[in-house]
Length: 264
Image (cartoon, rainbow, N blue to C red):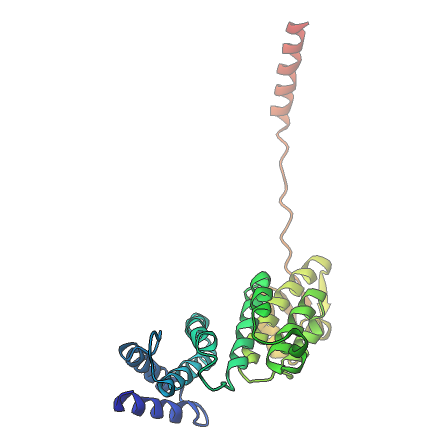
């Protein structure tokens, strides 16, 4: 690995692990490092390669995966995860285990849940290099497994509580995304079932902990909020009135009757 590549890698570690992370600088360094990895034949390694360099390349891509989540760039996370699979599968026997592998694999599982790709979720889960009876002991994998079960059960309160039980900070981003989908589903049910609700009840049903978030959500849904009465009225589409074309119906009926007379 070139001296320049090593220097960029060290800069990346300093910027990403700073408190707080310098995401802008980290993103710029990752772009430069990926070009360097391509030139060094380490992004998609083939043939004889230096295992120490491979471990560094894997570390760079793992930082890239976490950086993508913190930057809320899901397509970027997809690309980094696809590139990491080569290191996690083809070189698993020659590289030392990575402490970030299962956190990243778990993030990928939650990503599939947020995209409602349930079949892909189960296929990916079954292909993990971990025995089924050990999944419960791995917090990074058991977390998305539990989320999937609770979603299927409709236990939305458990999904909400899972945010505070996330094994890594990056997991919360995807749990928040799931909750956004759940809130919209609940809101659609409320609109169909009620004409109005007290603000407090609406906040409880939608898992909002403060009124400002509820009011913002209500505005997005086009609901009418009455703060003095402490209630929300749901916008209902007015039933379209259909005009019955009486004259045309009468004319059509008479014409049909004449045709019947002619047939007879």
